[in-house]
Each structure stands twice: as structure tokens, then as C-alpha cells.
Amino acid sequence: MYKPEHVKTSPDFPIPDTMRAWVLGDPDQLTLTKKPVPVPKRAEVLVRIDAVAICATDLEIIHHGPPAMIQGGQPFNKNFTPGHEYMGTVAALGPGVDEYKIGERVTVEIHAGCGQCKRCREGMYTACHNYGLNYGDVDKGHRANGFTTDGGFAEYAVNSINTLVRVSDEMSDEEATLVVTAGTAMYGLTELGGLVAGEPSAANASADDPALYRAKMTPVTTRTAPRPTNRDLFMMGYRICGRAPCAGRVLSPWRG
Ligand SMILES: [Zn+2]
Ligand SMILES: [Zn+2]
Image (cartoon, rainbow, N blue to C red; front, top):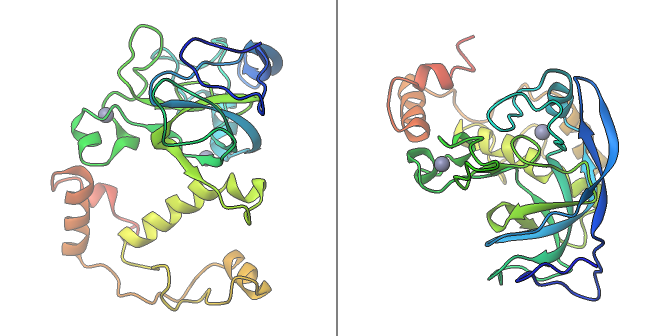
């Protein structure tokens, strides 16, 4: 039975030594196989995966490789398991973890930054300068599950505590797999000064109203906030990149 040294487990959540996992072989080749259940290290937990979404990026990875990067190269034939939009239950705690309890429902973010590089220190850890340098002998602390480390097309995955979000009981497993994706869109809208949670908009409806669903499925053509000025874009680029010149490149959705 799974009982690695310094890892906390619970009899309520027995963990097998091996798990089923999909593994990427050649392009477009996914094979169901067995792997050892991974072991959480310091500041990491083991998540029992209860639901996983399949993202278009997963299909890109399976077909082309990038943005997945394993050992600094293409992800093919490296015993790599894709999948980055998953949720589950905390099943084991790595050494020293007391932020989460075994049995808690969580959904996951993809990236845990190295925490040391310039971008990580500015909070831009999804663009960590040590991106992908986390495998084997080049552990710099960055990991992106399903991109540079094993992901969610398996029964268990290891996650940094910084990538976990607790899920309320009211939210279904399936919905929880999309929390981070929805959060990405919300972040983008907020940063662009467009739609802000709580403000009136074209999709204004109560949460239990089917109109909300219809509105969400309908392109929003009415903007409630003024179009950003060049200076807004400049300042936003400065916040994101820490320097001015990228403002026009990164933030040009209205410039074609
Ligand atoms: Zn995705
Ligand atoms: Zn970093």
C-alpha cells in the first residue's frame, strides 16, 4: 500500500501503489497504461482526480507537442501524461503541508512558478523564466501540470499548494474543472477594463436564470466600459511586462 516516508495519508482515502494513466507516445497516440502513484514533496499534495476537462490545448499537445515541453523538448515518447483542467480530492499531504486537509475538494491551476525569477516576483508566474526547467536533474521549482509535468489524464496527480483552490459543495465536479479557465477570462476582462464582476452588462441575469446561460453563449456586443486609451494599454503592458515596449505587442485586441 502507498505509504511514502514523510507523506501524510488517511485510512479514509486508501491509495494504491499504481494507477491508470494515459501516456503520450508518438503524435496522436495516447495509450492507457499503469504508472506508480506520484509522491508529493514539500509544499505539494497528492490529488485524487475526480473529473477532468479536455481542452483544445490538450489536443494541440497530443497532435503537435507544444506548448508541452518535457526535458526541454517535445513531449512524445517520454512517459508523459497530458491534461491540465482537472479537479479532485486531496488524498495525501507532502512534508509540512498544513494548508489543506485530506478529503477536501479542490480544483487546480496549471502553473506553480519558481518564485525567484523576475516574472514570478511580479506575479507573472505563468510566464516564469524557468518554464519547463523542472524535470529530472533541472528542478528549478516551476511546474506546469500537463505541460511540463504529468497532468490530469490519470487517477492521481501531484500539485503545489499554490495551485489549489477549494471547491464548494454546491459546485459539481464537472463545473469545477472549468474554474481556472473561467478565471483566466475574468482576469483578462478585468485587466482590460471591460466587464467587471458585479457591474451591469449584456449578460446581466440571476444565477439561476436560464437567460444567464443563453447570455453567456451569446457574444457580448455591448461594452459597458470605455475603450482603453493608448495610455491605458501602455500602463497595463508596463504592469504585465515590467517594461513599456511590449504594451503594443501584448495588448492590441482593438488594433487588429
Ligand atoms: Zn486549457
Ligand atoms: Zn519564475
